Every structure is written in C-alpha cells, then in structure tokens.
Image 1 (cartoon, rainbow, N blue to C red):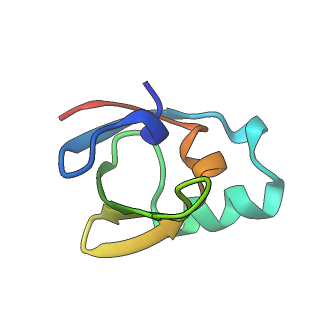
Image 2: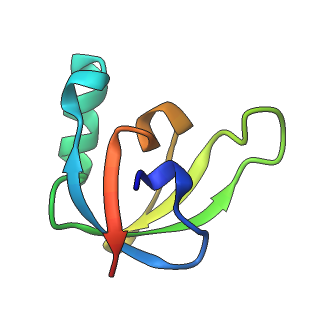
Length: 79
C-alpha cells in the first residue's frame, strides 16, 4: 500500500520508496527530511479541494506537507 491510500490518523512504517518515480531534487529533499525505509509516519490531514493536495504527515517530531504524487511513491505498512 502507498501512503496516498493510507487512512488518516493511523501510524505506518515506510517499507520502501520508489525513488525513480520522483524527480531527483524532490527525492533529495524527502531524504533530507528523513523519509526513508523504516521511518514511522502518520497522515494528519488532507487538502479539501480538487486532488486532495497537499497531505500533511507526521514524521518523527515534524509535520511536513507533501503532494499526493510524492505519497504514491512511498510504500507503507500499518505500524
């Protein structure tokens, strides 16, 4: 399952990231924030208009916003 399809409010563990699906600079930014295999995340909020962008997620002690296209490249399992 990808992070895009994961339920809000539940914790998940990243099992992998499809780095090839992301632009190189986007991948670098996500890695710098700690988005990588083994990290625990939770969806906090989804945008309300159109494509439901952005997605606010908790990663460690941070809250970051990512686009749905980025969330589709992040594979997770329930924690």
